[in-house]
View 1 (cartoon, rainbow, N blue to C red):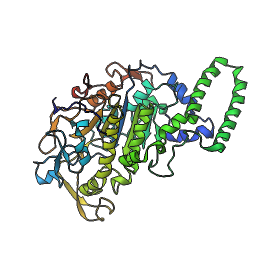
View 2: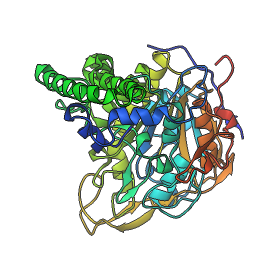
View 3: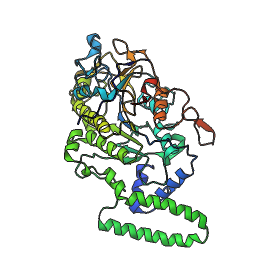
View 4: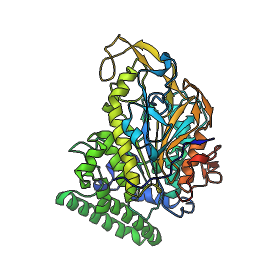
Amino acid sequence: MRFKPELRRAACAGPVPRRTFLKVGLGGFGSLTLPGLFRLRAEMPAEARPDRSSAVILVWLRGGASHLDTYDPKRDAPNEYRGPFSSVPTNVPGLHVSELLPRHAKIAHRFTLLRSMAHTGGGHPAGSLQLLSGDPDPQDKLVPVRPDFMSVANYLRADPRRAMPYYVGVNPISRYDNFTIAGPGYLGSAYEPFGVSGDPNSPTFEVPNIGLRGAEQSARFAMRRSLRARIDQLRRGLDHPAMAALDSFERQAMSLLTSPEVAAAFDLSHEDSRVRDRYGRNAWGQQCLMARRLVEAGVEIVTTTFDGPLCGRVANWDDHAVNHNVFEALRFRAPYFDQSVTALIEDIYCRGLDRQVLVVVTGEFGRTPRISYSNSTGGGVGSAEAGVRQPGRDHWPNANTLLFAGGGIATGGSIGATDRRGEEVVEGRVGPGDFLATIYRHLGIDAERVSIPDFSGRPIPILNEGRPIEDLLPRSGA
């Protein structure tokens, strides 16, 4: 595999399921409470933590973005493949991206494009599960069997002594239609992310069960805490050691619910308005800003899904012709995507987080290089009225491009290549196992040796195959 061309880093230029969380906190201590969650995590056989803290921000393009129209443009492909967009040179000699991404072109020295990902998951669920968990099955599943890498890291690395969650989903990766496309599998629901839903750009947005707002909430919480303390007093005489342990988990839960530091990490009003403007005053921009705030505050895995109204009519990147005019949909969403992703990358470098934090941008697969045509099933943003024939691109697991930034890697180039039509990988092919091995290595997890017991207690390797991608390993002195 060849990394081309390379520029070293330049100086800066300028949990439990969401429903459970809603039942916890001020609502009392229910079935799987925060103390119960922390107790479950404390019982797991934790591996040694890495020498330095490390974090991953995964920007997930639900539905799969067209690689030809974003990060792997094909200027010399026939018209039926190339599409209407030109490619533009970046500030890295020889590296081009789509004209839809002018901000990317200006900071290409900050990222690396892996243009040679391929797998066999042709459906949204299978493609997502292959990339996120390493499940090799090409068939779609209603729910995951294997845990995704986020849950595995949460299981192995989460520290029950601290209030800040290890793994947060800001608009989490969770479902595609009726399919669950990510999750903890046999690890159990205790290792799901702390989920943040809603639009962070909305003036009424708030994260539930983080911090106490106002005297009335504080009084209600104190009353419930006092009641619980009196009940616990009765129990202590029966089982003092167990109650002492439970107390420590409850203190951690209280810390999450009451800590002003935790509340501040989620509160975008603490950011300068110019920073918020730079990310974009929209859902995707503010999701990325929250992701940066969270890793800076100590969260080690943040996922954020780019979907919803900013995608167009069907609210995702699944640009079949029946859903969208692929090119109109991309033209609509590209400015939001371009601004939010580049602001995140620049902030990671300018704030000195670029060795600690690895930013990854990808969806489950690419799109068919040959343009297809079908009648629209409905009018709206990015789509003609129902019955109008329009262009689209379909699922394509044979080739996809992923963006990597930070993580101490050498940036300013590309890895691998597809053929002149963008159909097949012709250089440096990598699979989901290689991607996951690279992520685990960054997080300080030895994927070749670590196993986790499944439901029956049988040890299951967290990765069946794959090696870290050599050209994405940190460079000494980088």
